[in-house]
Amino acid sequence: MLAAELRLAGVRPLVLERQPQPRDTPKAGGLGGQILELLRYRGLLDRFAAACTDPIPAPRFPFGGVHVDLTQLVESPMHALPLPQQRLERLLGEHAGELGVDIRRGHQVLDMRQDADAVTVEVVGPDGPYRVTARYLVGCDGARSRVRDLAGISFPGTVYPEVNRLAQITLPDSVTRLDNGDLELSGFGTIRAGFTRTDRGLFGMGASPASEVLSVYTIEDETVEYDDDVPMTVTELQDSIRRVLGVDLPVAETFRLSRFTFKARHAERYRAGRVLLAGDAAHLFPATGVALNAGMLDAVNLAWKLAADVHGWAPGGLLATYHEERHLAGERTMLHTRAQVALRRGHDPAAEALREVFQELLTDEQPVRRLGAFIAGADIRYQLPNPNGHALTGTFVPDLTLLTDDGTTGVAELMRAARPVLLDLADRADLRATARDWRDRIDIRTGKVENRPADALLIRPDGHIAWAATIDEPADRAEDGLRAALSSWFGAPAATTIPVGD
Image 1 (cartoon, rainbow, N blue to C red):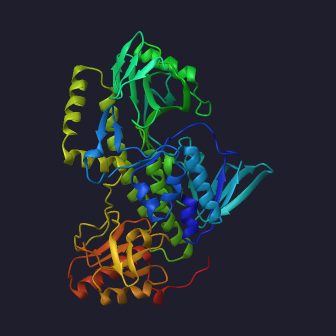
Image 2: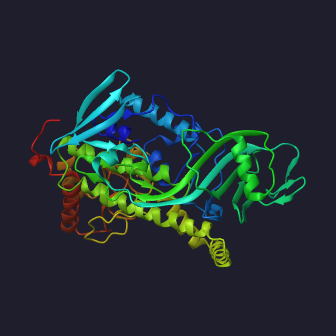
Image 3: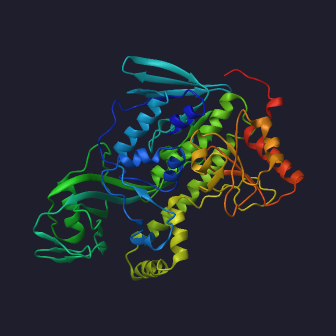
């Protein structure tokens, strides 16, 4: 994702991938949250959705052993795409390849050093060792990040003694599925849909009414160290179910088998000089369904800022905002995933009472809406300079329907090229004139919208609003505000920019 965004910004990245081939070991089973909106803004969502073989589920999500049902909302802030990680990686690889990204598989980073101007990386590939020098090095190399260790960035946190096993299965005729989602198992009785908690662990179960495929899930406390590259077997799954429920659950077919543990770790900093971190190298969250969303959003935030530095127009401190903004987002995600740990790991009557009260609160619309946005990462508002106090500054731009001279379009269409956009919603010729000195770096667009939220929006390539003009804001004040925002985020105007080499 980072490499593709860099190419859109006119930079030539090199991807060094340790694995010689994409791995078949099942990992994440889908993609969800704010990244889906960003993919739609890039024109990629339909392509990704077409690769899904399972129907897109209704917005119902587990949260620490309880269920968050977002179907009661007219517009859910959280959606998911059932796209297995192997397929997602293939699609992202194809997208990057189409943009001309150089991807080298079977090339492992051994060492690195940096100075004020560059980073030099020692690499071993299929043909032996070699050396690469680049302006920046970004570690997107996972929980055991070699790049993070070489940069000397600490990775504090907590390891929970939980082993989670997840599978998608079908059942033989000896097991009866009831209309309400429960199972009738011969010799045992009823196994309820949702979560079943025993003194040995947690069993989860759910399915779409239109599908024969059942998702099952177990959590047990174990001290065994598992190799992530060794796939889980059906026997291991059934043994876990037997330990938790005290009964065998027959399995007809399996479509996914995965095992994972939970850690809460957060890099002390996302940058050390010319070395940066993104994704699991920067953060590990103790809950499912959030890691891909957070990591890919890291990439989108970082890419345009790196590109600005490479192209020579980045204002001072721009790259520092990557850590400031995405570390804040990581802390927000860590907050709700740690809350999930507290909800799911308690076994005493007080913990049961907490889950019951929490579930009761989720029958009301506002708590459900807030929690859905929390899970999706859609509640993130970056703390950007905001002298006029506009409520949209720092938020992700909504996909407003725009009436233009060429017809109707949406904000999403304007973001395909991953360029900054000044969107004039009130025919403010003064603001368009102010922005013209930056037209080599930003696109200037006009359009009308019902109930306009601002006179103009300055939108960053990552979709966040850098500045917004209040309704009927006086020309001198609006021009000064826009000029300050343009300089702060996109450097000096063209008339005073000193050309530099690439």
